Image 1 (cartoon, rainbow, N blue to C red):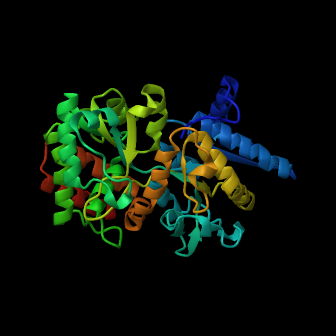
Image 2: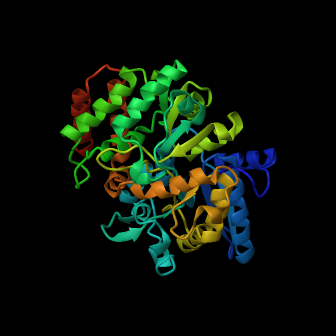
Image 3: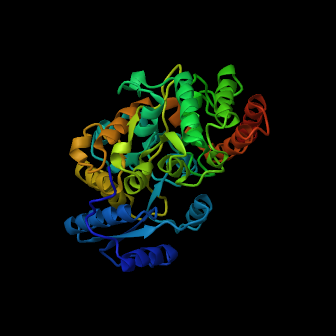
Length: 436
């Protein structure tokens, strides 16, 4: 899997043009009669911008009366920016958003139900747990489709072949139901720590707003963050406290660097520790692959499936593409989204950006990843272990705030400032306060 080949390089002029367009977002006048102009705001990832522009060009060739501008979402506080734009009715027509931020905008009417303009059975080819992200009850309480999931990125286990050879450990069988258990994984990590002289493993938390990446450990242990009503705290159960205790042990034993907590991590912290021989194991998603391709020989590392406990789970990563309520032509925007996400264009997008598709009909061979397709195949299989109840929590209307609460007390627990039971109680109290 790789971020190349690309349809064409993103020139500096193209990049600056997209950034300038983003800065001027909301300042354009109404489209001329007979012409529909749409603005798609997306993350500042060069290969993705190239793919979106190429797909938009093809759509425009089929529909000469439509113009689609691909813009870069401004940096800073995304929720503040989008909320302000929606309030002023100046949001982009189409927005790329992570699932964890999505639910609040469905509840408040910020996203449009596009089901009237989708072909019959359009969602049938999507993996059920990921389709549940967008199939929601909207502001009126009626069921609708409020966007399209385009790709995902979940967690599996990476290992350094040279280090495991040195300590005489054989990786687990290459089957999702035979992945290392919690106890097996920590036993190996302790041996790896002795071999590296630094750490046993690293974890792809990736930054301050990514506390939700801890939730797979909670759910694979039989715990839950909240009950089925999505507002009543459930983390104070024995399973919840035990999951916190297990995670706290990583840092108490020095198996994971204190620079690699949720808030201590930067985007590439986990991958850097792994690539520089400071950690011989890593739990991470596909975003690690470009760095590994550039940093270490391919033959020095490999992957297996995500660690497991009483159950299996992995991270709910990826994105949603949605039509905002500022859009004056939602029927055209929905038609473009269906076109953008058809199998052919999904394959192009995932190949160019190194992403994992969420459509049942697309396999690794069809995408044609040039770098480590064996690893991407494991990500594809691992998708099915992302729990539906965890997805429901992460895409609930209040999760954006709950995620901040989780991050605050999870980090205090990981560094030993509060006990796991105190952390569970504080997280539960924070969830109750969000509810009210």
